[in-house]
Length: 238
Image 1: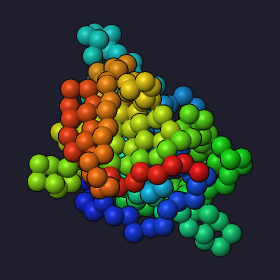
Image 2: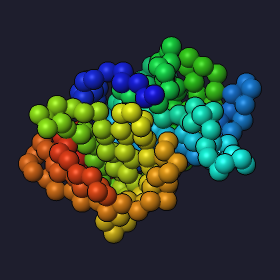
Image 3: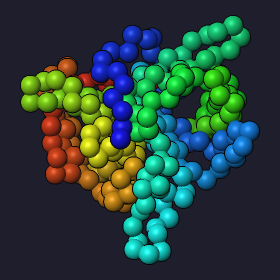
């Protein structure tokens, strides 16, 4: 079950440098016991907010007996959402992902790594509290306007839902009973869900309409669902 960690929407941190913004694809994970080049991993970063989805290849292998997904396959998925802090520590640039919601139980230590940009679209992350190396490459289609929205109840309170967009890439986080984190691309007013913690959503095309009520709120219609959202961020990409 996705864990609500910190209810506040405010980050309290400076915006991340512009070079971080967009959607990053993990092309390599190396640990002392593992090397992974095949998992579907997407990290979407706005100026403050991030969403991350990680689906191993094995999590999309249907059981031969009944064509269904097993509990073990669901547990192997990972994903989280929160705010990002980048700071200089000596000669190192250190990035910390402060998780507000987590698909897995909260981890015992901070999600923190040193970041080295080899190019504008390739960054190497090395763990600080755990021994790992990850290589990330930025999707060209994610270079565009960034947006971060928070779902609202009828009384205006934060209901935990998040919509994050970078360029044509959109992620939805819904930390409710279904525990959904979905990633896809928006084209011609349609959101094509490429991967999700809910496999039945993958491949769906959902009509998307967003209208601003004022500087603080917006109305979103996504598929057959609609509701009010707080505008946490809405800015042009660098």
